Length: 402
Image 1: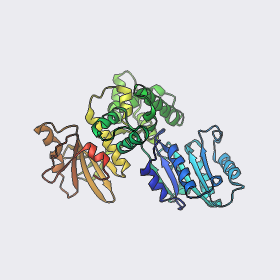
Image 2: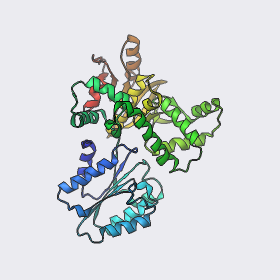
Image 3: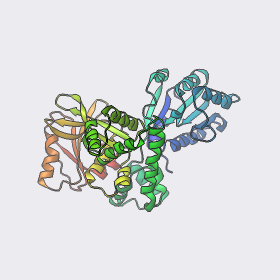
Image 4: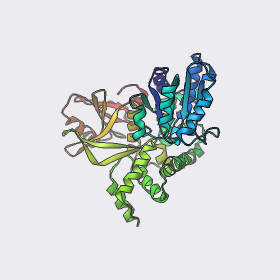
């Protein structure tokens, strides 16, 4: 695998600093490998190997640890004869009940540096999280960005990375989940389906004791099928009813929440740009990796939705808070905020006609502020004008700015 410098550089700045480093992300997105990279970085800094402990709760060695008391005993045993500062790296810590108690005790009782990884975006929710409130730094890890995909092709396969269009075609087709990059093309969709089933079983069904697994599957199938489209729990309920199945809206909302917490889907709320308020209906849902769409449905019906999903996840990766906008009933794909700055983005496949250009640019033109406004498409020609900016999607993905 490649070194994921984007995330590792964030961690390097925090080594031996007080905050607990918490890494969250969907299963198989690279959290374990990042912890191993941190392990190697610590050794390279001259820290004795006997002072570094990498504890995976999915390993046979530690999978019997179910609660914080057992974890306390494990940590005490591991560190009892260790001199100097210890470095504790925990993988899939959400498998341990009330793990926050142990982490807080480590912080109080040991001279230690703490790193935690888990497949749950809500690791720090609930009453127990107050124990470490204000004492942590959270890093969200995502599947390979297109830049990381190129890096992988260059370092691991010695591929020709000059043909970005060809590489992007492959990225669009199979996505960026790190494990599938090592799999033959004919097996990639099957492997993605296996990852999907594992996420479903371990991070949603088992974690939340879901009995009606068929209904959960149907709801997620609906979300995947309608990726990057506006819908609500009411839409799903009507869809199920049409299929001869009845389900309460509260149950639908619960299942969506569990899937969000498992980092499998992301919800983008709608924002009334003129009224500057968040609307509580007809959100959009995006997949953590667009490859799951292809694994489920094969051929792409709407390439625009795939591109929109790719751009959305990239914006999250770059640290933006992303909502979908509406202005006088006209949709704006993304309203992105970071450090009190804001940008507006429209995503489309091609600006192939005057009507398409008018549709994609006209909404942005009506936004009455001085923040930058972009249209992203696959066109090579620059359509910038009238104070609005146009960029090629590939150029956006391989650059460090928007």
